[in-house]
Image (tube, one colour):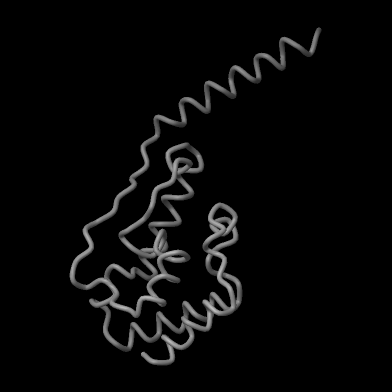
Length: 144
């Protein structure tokens, strides 16, 4: 038996499965950002927008690949988890002590290289933070 018909069947089944996966809906939302959104100095806001806001705010930019399953599932899951952990669009609704603990945890994860996540940095080179940008965040956190 030739390998060619088997390979062709595998490719057809794989393509059909990929197309069927596209029918599985993924919720990509950006709830309204109200008065409780983060108010930070421009240099802080710029760093946070570039490196954090896609997963940690209601201002997510949904790139083209966030519409292709199964990647779309992972992106939506990252955003859902990120918003649940820390949401800059709801920053003002957090108690001051919560703001401080969230900011300190954020800084610690950035300094340890855990945030932004490696896969996000791979797709978004602008999210790679330079030491000067980390220092901007450190000074902001120290001032809270």
